[in-house]
Image (cartoon, rainbow, N blue to C red; front, side):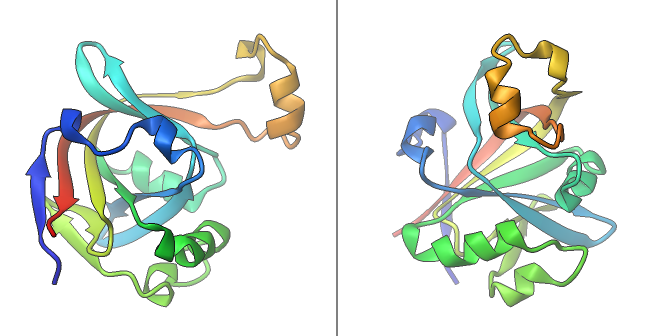
Length: 169
């Protein structure tokens, strides 16, 4: 079993911009079941004088039900060797199968929040804000045609960072 150490969010070894071509898993638990989705959009920053993560989730994603059904969730980051597994998790719905088991990832918990033992970094967050992104909010309408041809606009979540775990070497 891998061990993790708690670090300050300011001591993360990467910036959100380093992750442009990387993916993370957004993971939550509801009614004793864990689900996750692969994401590459989001950010870290300061809002309301708190260290926060910004996450966007499309309405049809099964994991959205889990995020909406809990107060806290995790963002986990992996090295490049997990790219195939993360791709599978992003293309398969947890409604249809136990995709986490099929991806052979190990769910562990910290204060009741699920994350993955195989991750190199896990950020735990508490929801502060959620709002649907709407078509009329876009100033650059070209974004809609490019990223939202089905008009399935994301929901924006702003969540306070409550803990960061980094894999010990």
